[in-house]
Length: 319
Image (tube, rainbow, N blue to C red; front, side, top):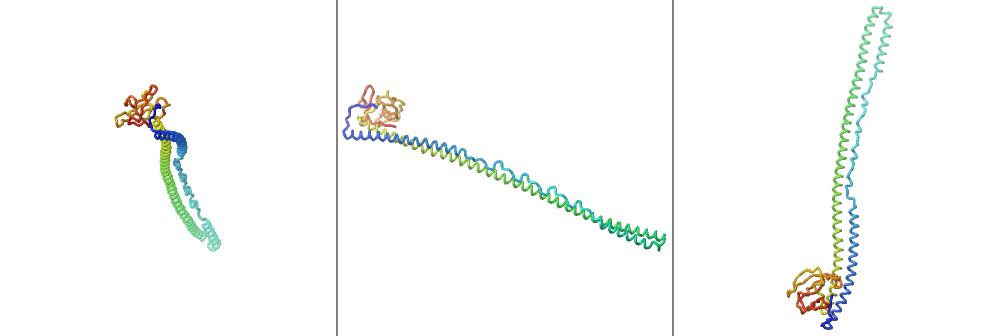
C-alpha cells in the first residue's frame, strides 16, 4: 500500500486513527492466532471424523442367521425297521402230544384187558374201533394246533398293522418336525436380513450425519476465525488509510484479478482486486481504478497513482 506524506486531518482524528490502526493490528494478530487454532481444530475434527468413519465402516452388519442349518434336517423315524415280535410265534404241541400218549396208553390197556375174552374176531373188531377212535383223537389234536396257528397269525397281523401305523406316524412326525425346523430357519434368515439392512441404513445415516455436522462445525469455526482476522486487518488498513489522509495505491498496473462489482451513488465504478506485489497486502480488496476517477482525488507517488478515498464516495476495504 502506498501513502503520501501530507496529512490534513485534525489531531483528534489522527489520534483515533492511530488507535484504530494499533487496535486493528493487535486484533488481526489475535484473530490470526484464533484462525490457526480453529484451523488446527478443524483438521483434528476431520481426522477424528475419518477415524469414526473407518470404525463405523468396519461394523459388521451382515445377516447373523445367514447359512443357518435346519437342526432337524437329518432326523430319522424312530419306528422305522421295528421287528414284528408276533410273526415267529409257535404252536403248543405238548398238550396234543400228551393227549395222544394218554389215548394210546388207554387203547393199549383196553386191548390187554380184552385180549383173552374177545377172541381173535372180537379183537379185530375192537382194534378197528380203537383205530377209529384214534383217528378222531388225532383230528382233535390237529384242530387244536390249527386253532393255535390261526391265533398266532391273527396276533402277527395285528402287530404288523400296529408297526405300520407307528412307522407311518413316525414318518409324519419327522416330516412335520423337519418342515417346522426349515420354517424357523427361513423366518430367522428373513428377520436377520431385515436387521442387517436396518443396521446398514443406520450406519450410513450416522456416517452422513457425522461427516456433515463435523465438517460443517469445523468449517464454520475456521470461516468465522478467518472472517474475524480479515475484519481486524480490514479495520487496521482502514485506520491506516485514514491516518495517511485516505490514500491507497489504486494504480491499475499494481493490481490483478480485477472484477467490476458495482457502482457508487455518483457513478464511479467499484472493483474487487488483488495486489500483484504482496507488499500492499494479500487479500481481495474493494476500490477504484485511478484512471477512472476525478483528477483531484489522484496523487502520483513515485510513478504510480494513489487515490484519496476521502474525496470520493467509494470505500476502500478488504472483501
